[in-house]
Image 1 (spheres, helix red, strand yellow):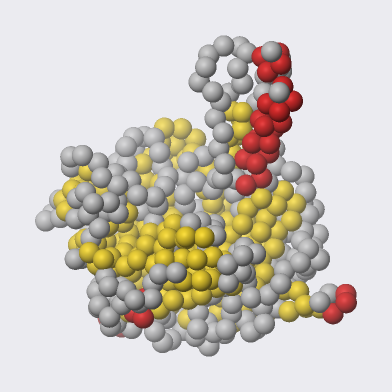
Image 2 (image 1 turned 30 degrees about the horizontal axis):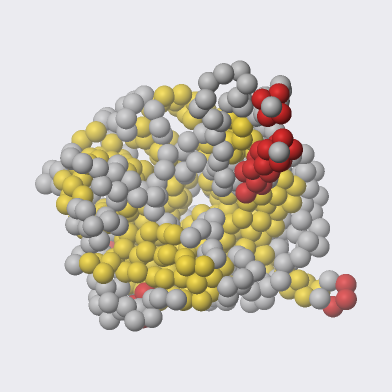
Length: 521
């Protein structure tokens, strides 16, 4: 009996550290004989999936991997990113904490996923990138319109806070511009407010299965009047280690410009993202919105946005009434004529806020006017003039928590937006070494209540290549963050925006009391 109790505690603690998803808190019972307060331990394994980037022959895609240095992490580890359509084995792409790798960073043509032969003639997937060491980004690239989805796994030293960025430049055609997405952790439910089935939009929901068994997925679409009639959105099977891009307009005959997509996984897990391609406004990825909540924050609306469109959705049957505010550089303000937004249950609501930021840094803050009703939300942002207009999406997101990172930042092309809607806060921003050389640089920022501050990240000394940005919460109120990345190709104008939620690099694990007599009685 006593041994069983001890084994159970040890087993739960080990599971929490390995998966990075489990959380185990210390019991509330007071007294010296209970378990000690929960400790934060680094996760030991992380999985991410990157969707197939583009069908354009003009597409050039960069993949950037980064793991921040984490105190207490394992001394060694492995990390690799391989094609979802190919077999990945331990013999390729694994690295240890010294930076040595069996595979090498490099380019592929996007057609084969980088095939290589092992002993015995077995085909294995060559990794598109091989991380060098925690604290230093690793890069890889592909070209063309047949690049597959990729599956990533990081263990040991590379797992805590591991982030992957997929950035694609498309010179012309539908969806032209800069498209960026943080590769997502597989899960069982996703919300995407801001999708569209209108004639001028070509939106795909990409489903990627990282596991050894098939996943079964339902896709539900909700417009301004409720659920859209769909005939083939239920029971979609995604084979093991495969990806399936599904054109939303093939799921329904209704043409709606404000659609919320709900991806619900019946069996297994998938990674999901929506690729939104516009005939006139370029394209970008719509990342999953944060969990439904009564209050939401959408950080990092560019100060030069010429159009901001908000889409919100209430998953339950109850209606939600939201107060709409902009956290500007000077404080919270209410957009004239858009003081509130009424969201009917299971219906998508949208509002055009125009150039709401008016040349200042800004973030949207949505709070309930009365009783809190869980909602999800996102905005589409348009920048530029005339034929040079481009668009990007920002979903409502969680705060940076303890720490958050974003990869693939380029010299003079990245802006970090920080907001503290509810109170004063202090954060530390660190720019990593470059992927090809350089040294880290850090700076601390103090944020006033209800404000948004756009900052140019501290430049890494002797920067070569791309770098990562890590935001650490130092003190005060919760902080929300987003990064805007501009295209560095003069022939491919564009921008993309990624949010920075907590990286979940550590997990709460209770420490057993040194005196275990209480468990032996």
